[in-house]
Amino acid sequence: MKLSEFDFQLEHEKIAYYPPKKRGTSKLMVVNRAEGTIEHKTFENFLDYFDEGDAVVINNTKVFPARLFGHKEKTGAKIEVFLLRELNAEQRLWDVLVDPARKIRVGNKLYFGEDETLVAEVVDNTTSRGRTVRFFFDGDEEAYKKALFSLGNTPLPKYIKREPEEVDTERYQTVYAKETGAVAAPTAGLHFTEEMMKMLEIKGVDIAELTLHTGLGTFRSIEVEDLSKHKMDAEYYQVNSKAVDVVNRAMDGKRRICAVGTTSMRSMESSVSAHDQLKASEGWTNLFIHPPYAFKIANCLLTNFHLPKSSLIIMVSAFAGHELTLKAYEEAIKNDYRFYSYGDAMLLEKNEI
Image (cartoon, rainbow, N blue to C red; front, side, top):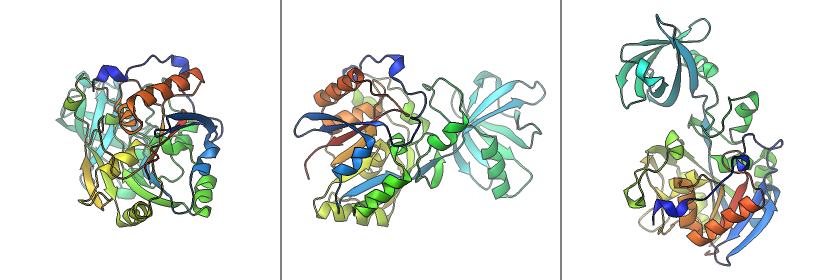
């Protein structure tokens, strides 16, 4: 399929620039591929679609405050450093993006904090905006990380055109976040409250946790019309044996297996055994799911409403079917659903259990 087939018009007022006042109160569109039906619900109704023995697969990655603001030595020029990933904990090396890139060169020292407690030296150029930096801090690992993250800001996506606020510290994070490493939230999980997670357990629904540290590549635009030529940025993932047991038990019982978010789906599809079941693994995945694609594990997907021509809506289309996906998006626009990270949710059922 061609990239242009995933384009649609979206007015700016449809974008959710803030989370709903109360977590878990978003709209929920329920799309059934087998029946071709679309229903309008609220997120509280998510529980109604699951029974004992079903499995809900969540991504427990934790967003860290990746945006740092500081200044250069000598000139005092203001700069922004966006932490992408830690390359070497012992040497305190990080892969980062810098702005303005043209003024930040190898050998420059960058200072952060009112008292300049944190210093970074640029040690390498990686891309036009990419740099490798080494942080210097007078303290142990725990104190260093505390200082680093206390100076950082919540890395809101660029299309949320405002500065991070106090509300984002809590709401741009899932209630079950554990493993620090993401620079973007797995947004389908933002809808869940602690009470809802408990209610799923009470119903006998099994929760499987895996980890995929979402990178900035999730927002990167696709530049090629031929989807087979697009290359995804690699992201670290881990699927452990406990998650494998939960998911494969549900598969054996022909139960519903719901991937909460595209990151959970990509993690599972990156960890499929020779017998088309989930297997334990970890590493880096650059899997780009686009039509036609035969999903091996999940038969249900919870996701938000995504950007036109993004890898995310393309994956949704591979799961739900192209025509039904575009029809669902037309319905969402007509019925004032909120789009993107802080927006409303869509539950997709294949009904092929």
